[in-house]
Image (cartoon, rainbow, N blue to C red; front, side, top):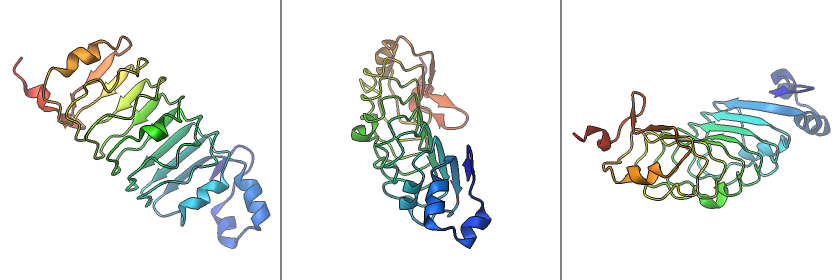
Length: 209
């Protein structure tokens, strides 16, 4: 654990802190990283209401995360957790960066995302996304990475994301140039990827013209 003023060592946690002391010191923690089964119950995240950065890797969160008290959270990275939904992030209204790559998301829940109006970066690579609906409530979004999913088309899914500057759709199922005119209307878009060495190509990249 890391905190701006105080920290809680693993030795202290193992020995068992008094509850009042634990909650006081947990409230001072600003940055927290969890890796491979270091959190017994997701509800315990509620003990850290003043986090600014939270990273969770290789934990088991197949359903909702419990971030109901984290209004100050700005950066959230939750990868390789088996996550199936974004529910539980609604209270993170200060969030500017969200990385939920390498999970099992089948959709980008617009009911959750529209509660995150400051979000500038969204990475949801290596999931099970089959469409791009749900992004209309993100007016500040600048960087969107959806590499290695099952998305067949863009259509008008990004018409409300006028601030978008970077879009990576590599390794999806886009196969027709009909999506290009829609993206051309996005005046701030400067980087567009339909194929890269990491995620692979879309069928679009094989067209002779």
